[in-house]
Length: 495
Ligand code: HEC
Image 1: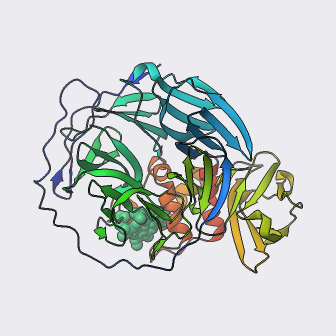
Image 2: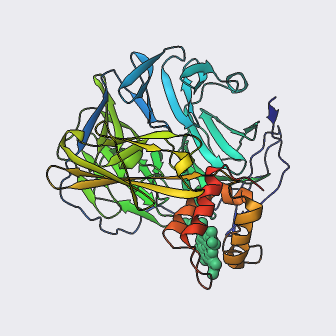
Image 3: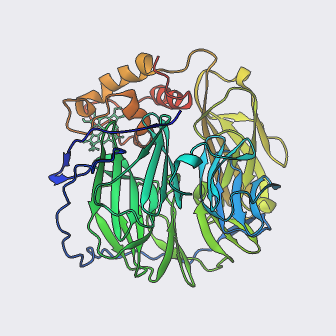
């Protein structure tokens, strides 16, 4: 049954300015407006580095009209266009019909996707398209959809003109960010606000971040004068926005904004939490930023950028078809989700970019050689031969011109009980993190399994790159890192 989340009124303060809270109650939420915007005269110019022109690698996906496309968790691609919806998986095309009407938005879900068409909200699950149970509850078909890892599992944000709804833990809530606008909303997730990964909303000329806590949703408005037309977040948690004047701006995780003058007349920006690459489109050009420099594309593909996909690629489409476009050679590994749990024997498909020029494919599992079947390259992961714990598969592809590319897949496997909060993660937290991230510490609080699961991507990134823990805590051993990875793969068991 659907319940509506009616939150108590509460006021919260962060860094001296007042925020608002979300409520599904009829009453107005308690709201104090943010300070008046300071004139936005542009941000400090820090010259952008411009690199050598970039040649792209194109992998055709399907030759049917595509004006929307997203990559799903299993590597399949969901595409929509004049011929309706279709699912493309390793060259196999499954038409899904045109029941939802023209598609407005889509977002991946575990084992499928959520799709919003002019005729309503649909769920794609196990290759079947059905009207979503949420459809009847919503004020209309969403214009923007977002799935984010929340404290109580997956959260789905749905926005239409003038409304914003959140589905989490089996509840649908009407999120009302006080007096902040909600007209023609666009959503993105991942850049931090108030020390937490936030949902960013560009609507009615305003830009603000929302952070949902148990009973309160805090809003963090930004002072930008030009309305934001489009927004995206990259793996460094940098927020990228394009304003009405076609200006590209970014906001780093430490809340420092920058204007980018390398590219003018920007039409759209695309990024993903899974990679460092940022793709920028103007009316006549395409650029890629890789966190060090902007590079202009010299073999501009047909079509428009539709979304960011794995390995730093983008999906590009037009009336003739859809292609996956890479800025460098890369190796995709499909057949098991990144960070997933190996339950039964799995065939991992090795899909190198520019496969025609590949000479050899070799692989290691935890630094031990593992065999790869001849083209089409496959690796069998047999759970009976794999120890309990977290593992890393690395595949190296060599090309005829002497270049090479690598792909990695992390996964976990357990015959016995997987790591749990109580037995494994809580002791690690108390020993290595609590000093700073506990109730009495000075860094952001991370003392519950809910907080860990909501911030797991950021935690793992910081642990893997050895940025955390800070001294005096000793760095995590590979085995300890494996506990955190295994706990995530197993779905965050409490005990
Ligand atoms: C000696 C103090 C200290 C210890 C120990 C420590 N941290 Fe941190 N951590 C910080 C500070 C300071 C920051 C930056 C401020 C903040 O985000 O609160 C930070 C930031 C983080 C962030 C956020 C980074 C970002 O990009 O926003 C994560 C995640 C994190 N720590 C995880 C951990 C984990 C997990 C442990 C234990 C294994 C740990 N830290 C141990 C001090 C510490």
